[in-house]
Image (cartoon, rainbow, N blue to C red; front, side, top):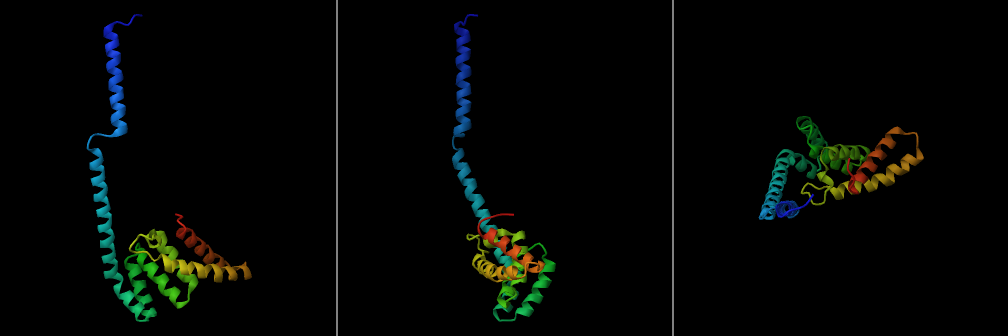
Length: 181
């Protein structure tokens, strides 16, 4: 089969079209990067506004508990938290607050279990960039749990409640290290 000028022209046109399509797919449409950048900024603003709204909501709901905690009325704060946790069962903040109060009271096993419940609902509490971060306080509980509960688990290897508490400490430790569910 011979290639005449008509066939060569069609082949050249086909190569040009394929090259142009590849260039558009790889480089993007003109002005597209500005639109992507603008949508990225809008998403970041929406995320920041959502964080601020969430923080305001949590302050409104859990503010009285925080105040009772600051005044040293831990038992009243825990009672109020129980009611709030029933009303807002899917909210992690109540579990984190409960863990903080219990840790301050020296009830390490229950504090760690409460932290685990909260982090399973929302991992923002160990994220350093989050306005809700309680990373340092959770890290203190983990450090204390590793020494205290670790020694108790070695002394009583058949104690299932200590083993479960130590598993919770290991879970928190992995979340603090950047692990996920």
